[in-house]
Image (tube, rainbow, N blue to C red):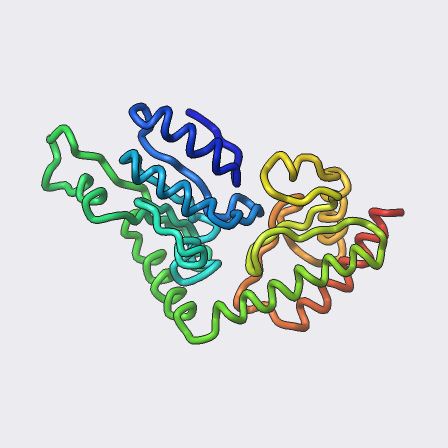
Length: 252
């Protein structure tokens, strides 16, 4: 396993070129936790991997059906070979999916079982009727006109509001990510990769998350926040009011 820094196109493409004969695949999140891909990064990685005949895999468990109907691939206009999706597909019900190019997915066709190229693909919840019904209902809602435009608009309003609250209180609160999916972070450093996140004040960020929960805002403390289709402008207003009080407690 080789690990390359996200948004470091030179290092990533060099590793692909040098080890192409040993690589089964290049795996990455199009939105790396909360780190937005730099211009040309995804395209560059996909291009070099394609040149060296290395399969590209997007982990779209977070970005799939959140950033756009077509996930990170549609949103960033970057098409991979295989993608993995999670519960955003089914509105939270237990479901996952793997999608990919026809010639790759054909390797899991049960009709070629026994051949050297056959790849087993299965799962405990495969075809579960409750989860698949939930997925069809979820997709029907997400397909409605204006859903993603509203998701991004309300999420970006919350992100911008958190940054503004930080300035009012006097702490460098950031909200890196995209509208429906971002991470509050108290840090002076621009967020360009995982190392940049680790240079932030993670203790203060965690305390901020705890204070948000105490104030009535449920989130996964110290990690990302998600905006859903049921959140309203009033929810954003209330969250920002609670965030200011929470941040003042952290500062105090």
